[in-house]
Amino acid sequence: MIVLGIAILLLLILLGAPLFLALGIAAIILLVFGSTYAPDVIASVFQSSIDNSLFITIPLFILTGKVMTASGAARFLTSFFESLFCHLPGGMAIVAIVTSVFFAGMTGSSIADTAAVGTIMIPSMVQSGYSRRFAASVVAAGGCLGILFPPSIPLILFGAISQVSIPRLFLASLIPGIIVAVLLAGVAILIAMRGEGVRLPARSWGERYQSFWKALPALLLPVVVLGGIYLGLVTITEAATLAAAYAIVIAATVYRELAIPAFYRLLVETAHVTSMIMFIVAASAVLGFYLIQSQAPQHLTEAVVGTRPPLIVFLLATNVALLILGFVLEPPAIIYLTVPLFVPLLGAVGVNPLHFAIIMILAMQIGLIHPPIGLNLFVVSGISKVPVEAVSVAVLPFLLALFIALTVINVIPWLSLAIPSHLH
Image (tube, rainbow, N blue to C red; front, top):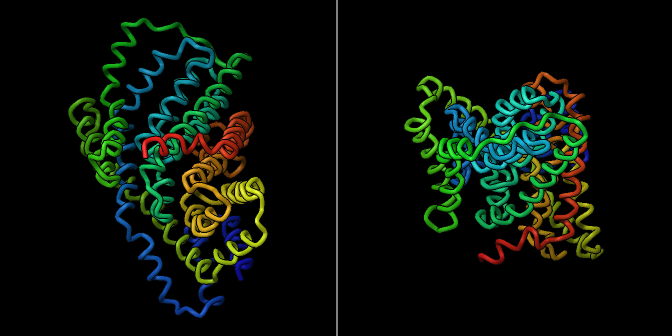
């Protein structure tokens, strides 16, 4: 029956059905025809899966990112980073990647990160002499950082399901996130040195000082939120509330570019995005419920314990599975389907859950820009007006960098565990 459910899921996805609908239909068929449970259990699982106070953080962080973009804060951020890096080879590409890192600290979402940065940086890069294909590929790759740096929505979901500390998950992501950002910037510099783009004149220190002060309120947002969490002043939920409130306050008092009608539209957009995520979470939870009730995790654990595979074999198998899922599913669905299966195995094979969570995020990052299905490719294609096929080719060097990062993090667990272990 599980094979039948997977076949139905893939068929519906290929036919263009919305992901939550494909997941829901596959789950309903499996529960109705492959189990003894009454159909009303579906509604119960659907409701209970989203009855978690941690999920309040999702719309709040999404709203934070939208307010920061619409208020003009994002433009001042990019102007400041441009003053620092524009004179370097591939300088504007570096600006796009660094901006993506900071926006990751506001939104926790790859799609939101890509859309916000792409709207500003793609036209700016084209104006600076970069090709549209290259600009789109840089923003698509940089947008992947949105789910790696705190407050990553996938990490919040992982922690909520696995009962792993979310603040420690955030700490575990910092070094891998920096590694990924450096690798992406390195690829951009190498491509620029082969003739892509134009090196702009260096800005004076006076210009940098002015742009810094204009960007300072936006630069402080990740510091305020994450500092509050790690100093023990606020919980994750309170930090999300603080982030949204801070963004609204500086939009109203500092940048003053966000009118009330525009703010109302942002609230509606936030509700749309949040409902999409929650539908995917709930539908995935129903399918996960079937897998758990069919004792799939127990059977998988028994198989792993019985065969005692080497650690490298286990990691290779899970990475391949996550990469394949990342080609067809969105991160929330992958987490809800795989965490209940894989987390019980970690103790048997000696893998730290923090390390495994970062591996999952890196694998999902690759799925976001892997041709031809990667969601980020479609986002930047819509912004840049470059066909998805052309962006898919241009993004290949950055895709290679993500594979290198995934390999390094798999092989060196210390990179994920050093900061949380030290601070713990």
